[in-house]
Image (cartoon, rainbow, N blue to C red; front, side, top):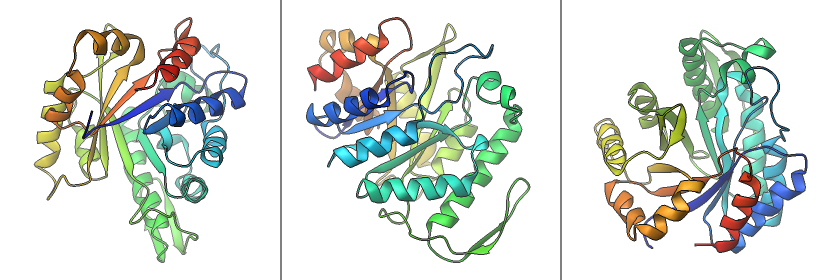
Length: 284
């Protein structure tokens, strides 16, 4: 297959960070182009969720033990992060990986579990405002130039943030958002990539090729060029394994619709970890 990158994404669940890091090492050996980790604090609105590991620490392990594979979070809810701390972490991780970091951002969920139980903002509109301001702060600090910011939610006095990431003009920023809403894709058009999400029956499902084509056209209408811009197909691994075998050429169909990445993710149901291990072992 040509013209489309292939990635694996894993929930940040478990008790053994070494196991998650080793999965990233194995993904590189198996030929995958990207390894991404979910970014959650508590994955349950009732406060009784699974064991969770910090994705940033695990990604540092992966960065140190790999040479080629792109790495990042998918997705980081920027409204519950201090953008300047995130900028420092990402610059460090980009340098540690020799320029392989990708930052996926979005509003995040579950709202009560990941936000409300910690006293964080739960209103979606306010979190969207914080996301937009946070990205401006992140980008300004990543420039290495003298930067100040005076917004509604963040205010920074003039400063220079160094060292900068290796990647210039910045670490690629991919923005996730749930279709058919258009505002998240408007936000994505201002940055470096889009991760359109579809829900059906309260579960995430793979967007259709026509969804991807619509996102491509929507974003292209707002940008001078699509060169270097990424559109990601977020595909449930449990479904995609059988479907890819049964429908030869399906990934190319998405590529022709405008997708540049195909990322398979584990669904946190019983056996998800074993399924991810098996999927990585099969390779491309």
